[in-house]
Length: 182
Length: 359
Image (tube, rainbow over all chains, first blue to last red; front, top):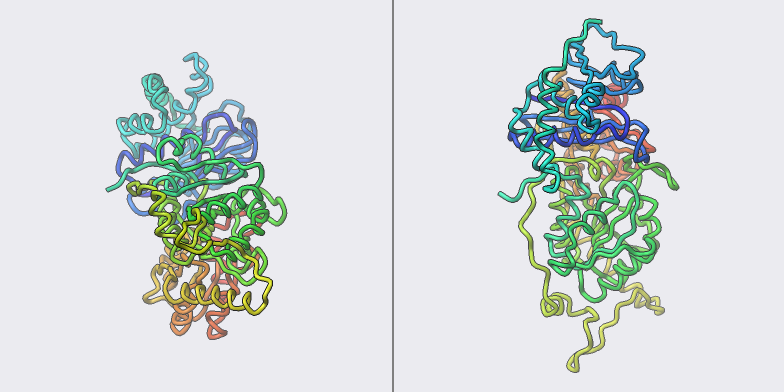
């Protein structure tokens, strides 16, 4: 099993940290992982994306140009990465702020209204965990228990009290994701 | 099995410095290597191992602090990225001339000038053929994974004392910024002052009544003596070429074509080898681990086996010159690589192999 994933959106959306938690979850499941970020000099705004690879084998290139799954969180990323999904692959996106929806017919497309749900839940910071839940529902490559272990590893101890809330957000995301019919 | 963590290459290097018993770090922040200093400051090794961590006022100050620490027999480390390394080059030349131990990490970014903050491999000439002035060489290691960003600190430490010569770890923005699983080696205690004096009897550790004064300098105004000194340096570099060349071969046993690469490009090339083999092309990869001394001998041997070589590096073509020298026109050698902070993909590498070598 090798899963090559791109997560792309605005800086500040938690793109990089979602990738990090996913990568740590992979380690907890005994997999090989790589996490390769790409972002500009800005702290916020700007675009940010991260390539995460989770594999049973030693990972050769951490840089790839086509992906099994693209998780897309803004319009610029849609324009850039929709075409990079392998035929038969998966695209997951949050329709919030998207004006041109994905149109490919040779991939599976899922939508997840994570921005709205995070607002409903009263905490916009858990947006990325809702999206992660959506991904794990579509591609259950790591078990939820290993994601929780990944959270424990990637969050400093003083933030461990936030883990139950993050777990809840992941579970909400698992329910929220739905196939996009165009 | 050691401790397992998910770390950035820069963080793994910093943690490895603490664990390797490095005596001091002097640096100045610059993207994409600032995590080295940030990580060291967060770990406060000065409270545990006694390792000094200091943000100098400039790169020039940092390298000269390394000069001082090395002169006293300590093992200093500095790190920077391309423009910052250029600023340090005067000091590096002095330290090579004065024969002092030092580990320098260069997390290369796009150039020339300030360039950009994306990954590049365009500092190969600077690392392997000078950069500073004078007849000197650095021992240059090129890690291609986060694991090697940690492990190569131990090799660098050994080489820095074996040869009394600065060692450069030539990394890049990919290896520095990416996170991978890393198994950390167990901590090695820092040397005591007595151990430093024993290991470095040449160092300025305070003159004892029963020995001559130790002098650390790169200056000798007598040209005949300076020439002898440079010949002595040359002998060290020759010894490196005899004893400490490092490289890795992937799928070379039956290879008809060969990629030659180092660092992050070698990872990309590994995938290109897989893609080529799926198409039935017998492609292999020689990954240079030491860039000086370069694995010339092995490349010369392989030139009797393969039909052509493609040197793949994120530059206009620098290492390719060393490949050509090694191969000595026996088979065609071409270069491929994106530059200026653009990363080539495995597919682009394979396409270049087909258009430039297989034809």
